[in-house]
Length: 528
Ligand SMILES: Cc1cc2nc3c(=O)[nH]c(=O)nc-3n(C[C@H](O)[C@H](O)[C@H](O)COP(=O)(O)OP(=O)(O)OC[C@H]3O[C@@H](n4cnc5c(N)ncnc54)[C@H](O)[C@@H]3O)c2cc1C
Image (tube, rainbow, N blue to C red; front, side, top):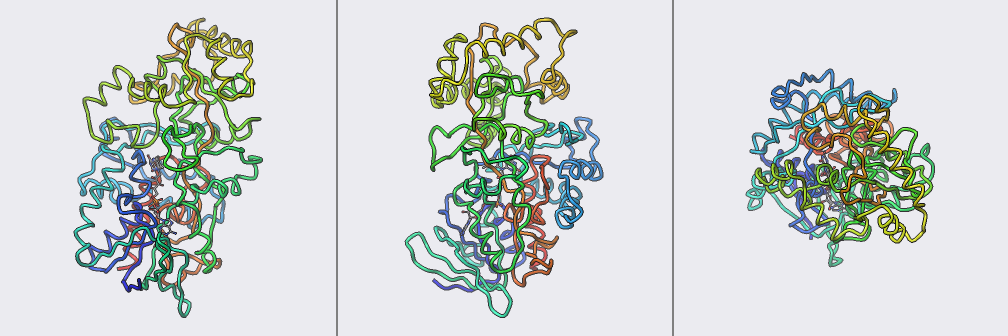
């Protein structure tokens, strides 16, 4: 197969689709090539949750949140810990906060994609300030809804300007007279292909589906990477095209900066080896080490600094840790990221969603207790201890230690709120001051309250590459002297969501799907 087109887009994920859509609207001929089959169009956005950091929305205003690009940029810079050299990441951060309302929120509204009225307050910061205000918006229908609305616009072009090539892996970029001229690769059947194009856009996603590579890029100041890291991306997101861009002279930056999560469990019905599910850890659960001791001195609580959680867990003696809670807490707080385990939001079933919020998520509790070996449920502490040890087969949890850990916490809680002196409780109370967090966070009560006990064995799980191919604000790929490589662009996660690392060390959360939209739009503007 040999083809000629105006713009070649490598990758049919969200970033690739938005690039293609914008170019098709302007009359260009576009070819999208993807290693996966047609039904996987949308890439990770098809299975993602759909949380987006957006600044200054009507939803925020309705909740009395006063947000502005200036405030968001201040928060972003704080969390990112940029260095003086981060010229392009900083430029992309500024672009994001200044354009998220128009180019993300209203862009999506025009595609008939809306958001839940609740605005969540995530990544508030721990030792480093994060989001000063709630700005995490959830797509009603998850990001799968955005993908399907986009496809409804794009696919009609297939009869004319759009060529779709599936099950075909790009192996190299081609080049003539210092200009990138397309790509070569092979289909799943091993048939070679070449596509020639005026311009090429790399939209291949990140590299965190390649766990060996995640380990190689593990932040050096965190010590050795944990022996076990679950895969929360996709094996096709392997970094092969990052290397190819580098071979062509493009610059890769911030490859050590990744947005992994602290609480993964193996997918009970995996599609590929090592596939994990990322839990939204329960704020009220005690986070314990392999022996059953509470990790500290700073107790680990989600929602403040994900990067800190990963760093702490990566430095534990064993590659796993435990979340200890009870059924009462699990019903209110336990959740799993992604559309698969949030069917009420994905399928836009309002009454089902409200029922789960009010009466607890019995569906997810039953599903995990039935299917996940890591989700251990027991009637009493000695039974729980036995089950925990039989799961790890290392007898590491000591019953006396476990009993003391829980009793110490429960005794403190039982003293009453005027004598509470615990950082986890302080943060729970702070979180509960914000309406949507209150709905999903229990008021502090003892763990041993007669409700069945739950222990969840968790490992670190990979997710997003914050670093990647360095680009300027036109999404042009830059060489080591920061000059654009003629004919080559990079968008979405491949480009570290802009500039090869728009988030720096930490994301304010929900900056990824929007980052795909913004980088794709900029590339398309530059190409037309
Ligand atoms: C479970 C889950 C939940 C998430 N939740 C959120 C969230 O709530 N908010 C948020 O902002 N982000 C979230 N994310 C992250 C977000 O979904 C991704 O960062 C984003 O969708 C990446 O889009 P992309 O187009 O850059 O790359 P991808 O979606 O990874 O698409 C890349 C495409 O390129 C193709 N490809 C790769 N290499 C080749 C090759 N050599 N040849 C041909 N094709 C190739 C792949 O097959 C794939 O289709 C989540 C991710 C997951 C997995």
